[in-house]
Length: 209
Ligand code: 5GP
Image (cartoon, rainbow, N blue to C red; front, side, top):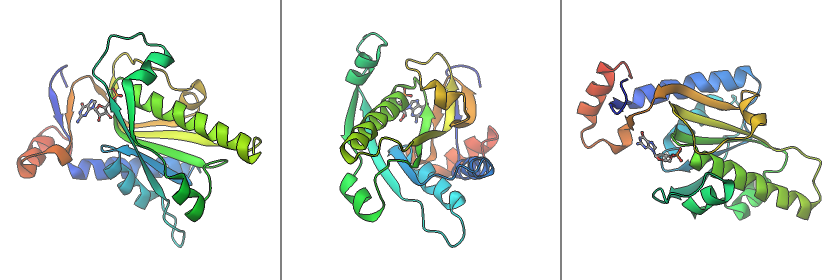
């Protein structure tokens, strides 16, 4: 895809990408205990991959949603603090529901799902904030010895310089999973389509069906 061109993605394509990644995760024996969807783009991929990650006879993997919005580029430095200032939490984990129906996230495998990794700002913020909160809970609950393992699944990673870095421990151990790495450009997802039939035709023409 030449830079600045639009890439159309069909629902079927997303379904198949989720299926492929789920198989990869299960092959690595890394079935998550909980899925965290970054709203709104991560919600549909999170729901689809959950079905493919489910083992027969086992309970559905719980999905929690977190909402993050980016401010317009404020021209700040790339340091952690300034990145934090560009991101606003619009929705966060429901610890009450988690504790009541599941458990805390301490010691669990957590799969964070979003549709696209563009500048990486959102994923950086999600991972660092979740890590921070779990570390705080570990101290409160005196469960410091349990390791919580975060993985990331995105449908698309744009091949471009990123504004933030994810932990090396995640990048170097295969726990950052992009179903596809694509050139920089605009990705058109089906949930935004005004005319889904036309959108699907365009996606098919680009081989994304
Ligand atoms: P980030 O720059 O933090 O990696 O991405 C921020 C958000 O911008 C993404 O979660 C996504 O909602 C939106 N975004 C970035 N690039 C694209 C794109 O090509 N298509 C669409 N539909 N959304 C995008």
